[in-house]
Image (cartoon, rainbow, N blue to C red; front, side, top):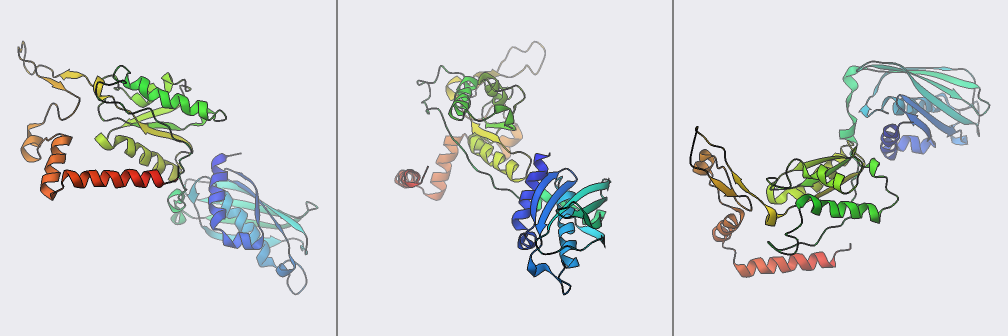
Length: 338
């Protein structure tokens, strides 16, 4: 049984008002396979008091649609045919089982059998899909992403109480605590751990997200990736995770960020000539290093505090304005539900 097939089926069914109106229910899903049931109601009978052929076609066509869309690609039928073998009556519980008969890269043929509660065949249906009818299904049926839990360490001052803690050890603390707070969570079910980190020049180098998962005791199979949007890195990681889930590429992710400016190292560039006696050293705590002369010439290389001063001067933003904005932000956050 494919979890992805069930996810795609549920996403389709939410918007499938026709299937819901007919009382069609999903029984089983797998790759290239679906099984649906429908109980014949009096409103579905024709003038002979048997189930209308169009209702049987709709049941078979629904099973066909869910089977050929089970693997995440939206296919629309290019042709279909049905043979009615015996009548169905009010109260009959019909089961339509769809199986892939032939599946190419872009085309497919599916056979669907409808049986009644006595397991006698009521109808046989064959559906075909054509290449020009395919498009990206996940893009058309975006899922919602939810934040299930959140935790952080205290925020320390530069050179303060947390200055003695490595960035990778610091990141491992909330990761470990998440598992402690959610004992029913199987860590192997986590698809990826995404961390933002702006420095990555010292102890936070070489993919600190994955190092932190290992230090926190996660299985080595849990992947990790580290992204850098400078001061927006942690927030970007959360957006990255949400988009990944909405696109259907993952189901369970951990996103966050880690930084230790206190432990940011000094770095030294390589010699540009043999036996060079001059060395250039940079502090990676804040600002640029190894500046490209063209960047400095055309765009400037101001640090974040310098940029803040530039913006404040350009837009005439006073310190009082900044304090008032910060107060409103904190007040709004304090009033919001957690």
